[in-house]
Image 1 (cartoon, rainbow, N blue to C red):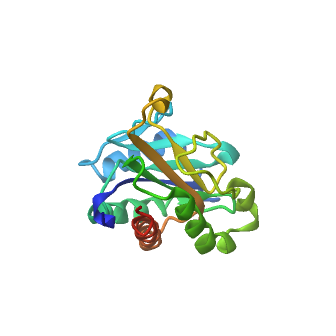
Image 2 (image 1 turned 90 degrees about the vertical axis):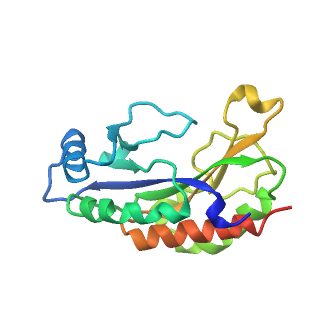
Image 3 (image 1 turned 60 degrees about the vertical axis):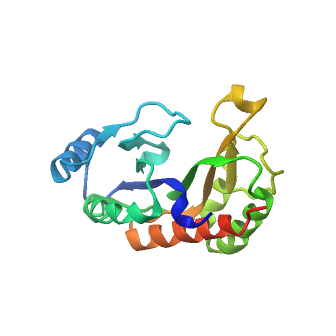
Length: 201
């Protein structure tokens, strides 16, 4: 497999600019007006099934999380104008993070323990001090089931009932500092997927 074979979703945390009093509903309307060809919605519930639309969700500490729909690496260019627009209303705080979701991986073909170690070695030392409590590091057993969102790499089965005979897994990488710059987002995603490709067994 190559990086272009994976479907990824990206979550970006940010806070309103100090001079701005942007409400979530106002931000949603502004995005819908600026990008009428895209589908933006408020996300009111979490699901392991990735939505097919762009999501906005309130977070703790007054932050907002922006969520992309599933996309291929070759489609990442679509985030550039959206992030440029968001920077006019939002900024990254010291507790803001970025998460990369890798959807629908076949079980048994990746050494996820090795993948975890590669990710941690590459990005742990770059974490802001305020982010280190949100990206705890623990080497997990391959295909371990965890719902603890604070680990650097999470492995989640699509459904609880799939634990008996799982065929697909969902991997989330949470070890990044926040950013609203498309080039940085795209570089991180490509590096993560290249590392995962190196961990095929």
